[in-house]
Length: 324
Image (cartoon, rainbow, N blue to C red; front, side, top):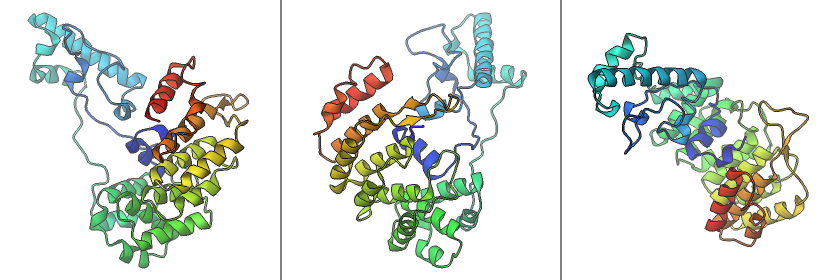
């Protein structure tokens, strides 16, 4: 629920491109299963060496079953040869795994298409559109965005193109104008993906990303309890990212006006009748964004969290307070 606090890759992937349901695959290097400075141990579990983002690709039961089988075969072969698992040649392990139906898939780059085809997919829906936005954001300099926006009447394609251009560092006047219109008119639908907020919120996030004039004031006006807590978290983060001094007053007002609010959220898989309080996450993010803007006056709000009984909150609060 708190994609504002995920990595930049995850936030863009889910919030800005709406690709939460896209299926990915990748290979795990054998060395990721071998601890350093510890012989004769293979990590047949989620403790293998992987970063936070890629962990999402191999954390399910079927993934663990495959990794366990790989470790079992490797351990057995190492024992047969009288060597450590780290000394087992990969060239000898691969055919053993292939015989059991475990083999690397051929590499394939998602949506690796010419720019013209990617632009044509912006008027579509679902994964193809999101993948096109992602690809275009990575090659935004290759696109004549003023010409594209001027020659495209489809509002969906214009909006998605503007998001891709902005996140690719190509936020010219035409791109800014499209995003500002979506923000000004408070367009809500269609959302880009399952966990992506309303369109005007995505537009605001993109405008904050490029530091568009007046965006801190506009986001400040959006900080009301009418929006769900995860969306407020995204907006508070955006104020820190925008780097505009108007964001300081907006965040401080928001904290004062919502001092008694718990920001209840029904977590995925949880009972909607018993929501979880999101307040601590809101407070930590607000203080963190203020610190980014050079204001540490609200850091005292973390005093009650640095010794929180939950390790995750405790670490996060201490990290933010140390930076503030």
